[in-house]
Length: 117
Image (cartoon, rainbow, N blue to C red):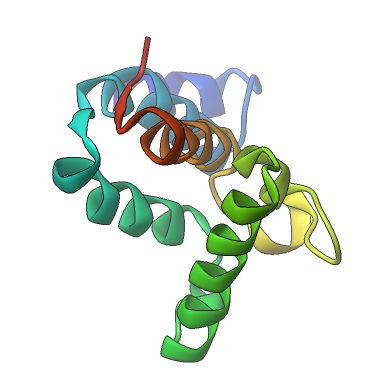
């Protein structure tokens, strides 16, 4: 929390940007394991990174369908953060964490295992 406070106070980041980077650096590296262990946790984290207005059940179903289609089409999951009508500014509250979590989700689908490193 000191990082967030000082980053905002010194004009380096907004509070949301600083918090995004803090989660990316300190929380996400703790996520590692098999698909069965991480898939639901990463899916929830990706939803958490999106703006709250999108977190209704309809939006969640649509987003899960997009992840599945990206996987079936062999596309990179992190592209979901910047593709179609989605832009980072409009639909992502924590874009850096969301993109990295999406890459980890892709690793789960392709390798059956994911880690931050």
